[in-house]
Length: 125
Image (tube, rainbow, N blue to C red):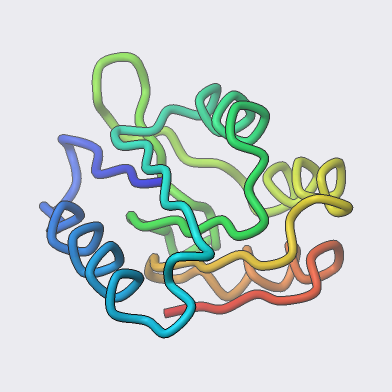
């Protein structure tokens, strides 16, 4: 999942996705993974993406706020942030499916702590 709202500092999310794809291709067991990406993610897209793909690992790239909120996009492409407990509640519902969450966003410690209550492996980058 990737979000780079137009009212925030530009991120090179395309480069990050390309690097992830390349790493999987080069990895010893990379063929055991399937990478499905969603860009310009809005809050409502998160649940839909999870139910469409049934992932074991979820990787989020984007912005975070000093309050620990992750930033997604609204319908105009501007920032719409999500409080740590709200997103953690979603992960609580899918804890039997998702094994690992990777957060590549500034200030994501609070969010990671909330998600870690439900998901066994969480990594902040």
